[in-house]
Length: 266
Image (tube, rainbow, N blue to C red; front, side):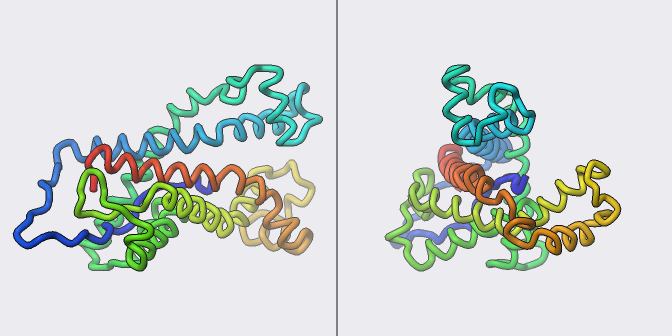
């Protein structure tokens, strides 16, 4: 998964001006890592639940289920509720949450930790340290962090509002968060998709007739590009990934930003 999606905050947002003599709120450091873990885990679960119907349909179609194998994605989305009820679209989602909660939590915490570590130990800040931390934690973290930082720097009143847990910190408005998260997910998917296509093709291994020509990642990518081109080769199926990943990333980043305020992490 490219993303596997998706999910973290940018640099500490610009501080709101304070009146002379006014002190900021006392930092709440107790159980910080636990609260951070919960924030990331909840964000990951909300994101996955958002696209659970698409994931269920994808599995049904990939498995050639005899009830749905003759249908397309959107017709299957209509057919599943008719046959199994609307909860049929979320079948297996509970088990997925057990896997996604620690995954999302660790990914969020990793990005925040990497970002702090790179800043304090290497003295690198700004876009570079977001890029480095995002590269280690996930390609969409850097994009979202940059969009958030640029937006709050250039249009704080239009795009931002005071954080509910710390009035001296600016955060993005909810609808702007959704937009930035969706854009981050789309950009990340576009950049990483050819590598995902290459990986899946290599995983099929000897099933494919051109197996001997696709032994390495570079050979596989060259073969796909040479025989199928960019649109029908390296980016085949990208539109469906957009349908899944853009809303997923939008919800993930927005939920995480809200959870940071709820758990007093700003």
